[in-house]
Amino acid sequence: MAAKILVVEDDQDSREVLSRIIENLGYEVLAFGSGKEAVEAVSKTTIDLAMIDIMMPEMNGYEVLQAIRAMQTYAELPIIMVTAKDQDTEVFEGYKYGADYYIPKPYTAKQIEWGIKTFLD
Image 1 (cartoon, one colour):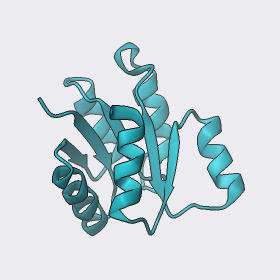
Image 2: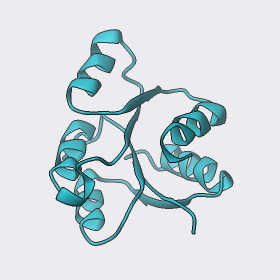
Image 3: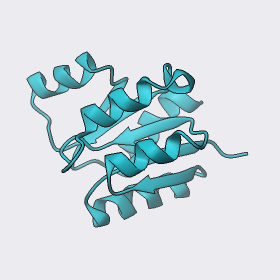
Image 4: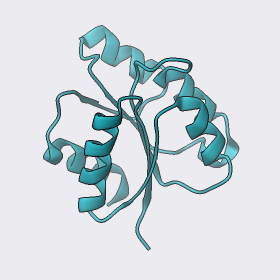
């Protein structure tokens, strides 16, 4: 059975592109446009990895990361931040919050593949 990857991205076009890349790699995608919806959904299902945008309304990516990590099931879940925030200080901040990996936008399909395979293969 294919690994299930959570995608949390408020921009619909970006969410669709990222989801398509992941599906083309043979993984199952669970995609949400809001952090709140994503956190609610993962509490009722199983995921193997999360890819989260940082700059989102209502609940930012760091808050989503913390909410998911607070669930005992997902304390060790690999979490990749996919974001336009690419300054060294911003990347460091992501790691401080507990991100496992960071992929800056714009990204290539290869960067997404390498990020995923780092944790799932």
